[in-house]
Figure 1: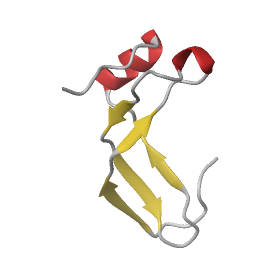
Figure 2 (figure 1 turned 90 degrees about the vertical axis):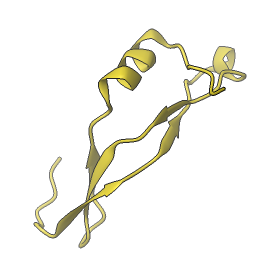
Figure 3 (figure 1 turned 60 degrees about the vertical axis):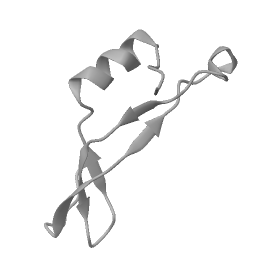
Length: 66
């Protein structure tokens, strides 16, 4: 799905992605800091997950923040 508008702006973001399921209830989330492209007309947003965090999500292992 793409936005039909062209009024987009890039922003930096921080998001904490949590693994789903009861077995992960006590697992810390995975902190992801992507650049996000947001349409200022309709709010459609798009981002790419950085490679390191993508590997963590794929492995289902959240790194602990010290």
